[in-house]
Image (cartoon, rainbow, N blue to C red; front, top):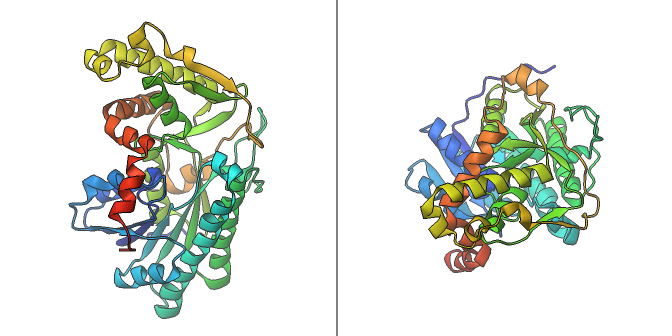
Length: 376
């Protein structure tokens, strides 16, 4: 068994740092560790939003680079010129529905992109600077483990991989490549597998923000099948803390599960959000003026917007994470319970209308094309 490390990162490269989880991690790190250098790399595809990092722009220790992890030369150059000692790798295609209709992009980014990043890390950290303290922290998902039956125990780190979607298969493959670079070349790595995240800045195609924003416009709330698919939900700030603990205290080369210990059926989440949004708007005249199309402003209730649709192919029935290893080895415990986390999330979307409307209207994608034409 490898010993626990006491690792102090100073200069971080965060891939996918303009996305949902990545951006929240950037804000967490800059706040928690002032003085650390934080370089964010993001390709700014549909789910990456530079505005997610607007509050970091004035920080002298922050740098944003528009680029792609498929670009080996750019990755190696950044590692050298910024003297990066730690990579936190969030960059990935991550929506299951999109992976079903277009799996090629998932193989390209999640598998090949991760490999290009690993090659750059090996070149700079092992070949050019042997003995340099370093860490490649790879952020993965519980979906690599497959699905659980109703009474099955939650996924553990030793649960065999059994991915059921092209997305899950691409993430499983990237996990194996990270492991191979540890075992073959001696690259210092850790892999974290997390449960479903929710919170601020999540792209509105995902369940929770989709439900919130659709309610505000009185649009249908589509529910796959009977809606009884169960997920373990993790507030995004708890995920950031978990990754921090793995980086600093985890055993090198070990996988760690980060879970919310918080299983909910999709249909129950949707009903809870309906109740919360109705309540918030009903109690606040300013919100009634801001969202006149919301059902409660029309004398209706949001729950009536629920529509059951045909289930998607290969839809996993249940995910659940057992974080016992993380609890024991790195003292990880989620701080947020679902009821408080979902209330914070609803309030964030209610007060950040410009953010989600700009994304849903396509204005953001057009703006990106005008703003960025080069890597850096």
